[in-house]
Length: 423
Image (cartoon, rainbow, N blue to C red; front, side, top):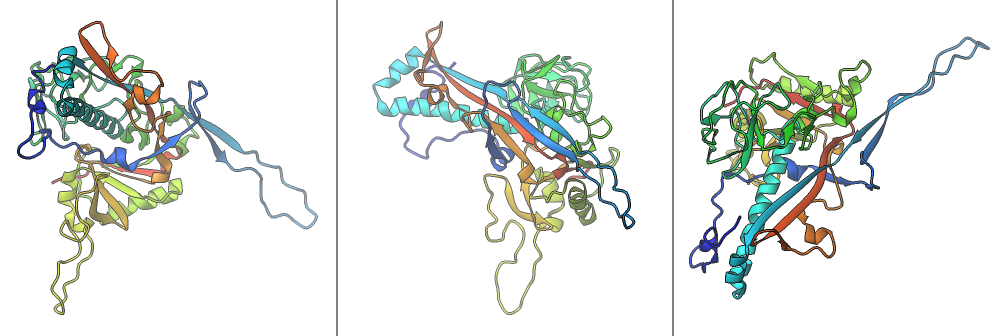
């Protein structure tokens, strides 16, 4: 709840630099890259239906002159279907805060702007976290057992101070192995530590933090994650099969992505391994990779492989091409970097999981959305809904709403390279 005491500094006039949001990295590269796709809802439960041709019709054979005709071979089809996941975001402000600031246009705008911008950052950060995971909304994944109050995770924490989280058992749909609905009190991005004040119990590698109350037996209130979609196995049962197609069933190999692993032992990323990944997508899915995604540590380790070719000429003096110093090499909103591999742009998402590289054809991976492509206050979606909603307390609420899901019509147009050694 936002009270006057919470944002009193924001209500003051600014004499120096503009307001600073003292929050660590807020990038949302994967969210930014994925294109949006709308479909008529029509009140259906399964709102995205994808018909798939899995076997061509007919027969073509050589025959003797005047010979008998061959039997026709029948086609085969399947259908993938997806449900949109609903999301809501809420913040509230006290009547006192509004009354005290409303007579100053500057102060009122300042207060509302701070709340809107803060919620927007949290919303998109959490949506990006959903997209990076396996479908369970992982905010931090343990690399090993850690039964302390401050727990180390294997990638940049996707959690923020003040959030309410559960620490979930990786092997069970609804087992907590530590903090339950615990408030995050500290996050250290450099050491990859999350502090809740409640120690874990019986934790193991793969256990994960998620938003409190969003994963339980029979459901996960999250979107599909790219690591669950681009895979050759079904996600955990709590997530459900991608597109409701069982990848373990014989004949459903078309719904499997290419996965290049090394049995859990990290090894170096090489040009041969990268080209093997590209060729496998071309051979299996008929796709062409348009984007690579990894974390920053992989970029540091394989800088020389991913940088452009360079030439040094005695005839002129100028910066060499390639690397972060080359022209156009600034940080982009979608994580695009000056690096590429085999002509395919390389994107760095600081929050991406460790030891994994993902490549995909953007034409086959996209976000299905509802009426609004991005989360918005309900006052902008539904007519006649007030911006500030009354509550049972002396506060007003502002509610945001969105429906969405990570979709694919061809998982074989993506590849996952696992067990990649990092910097």
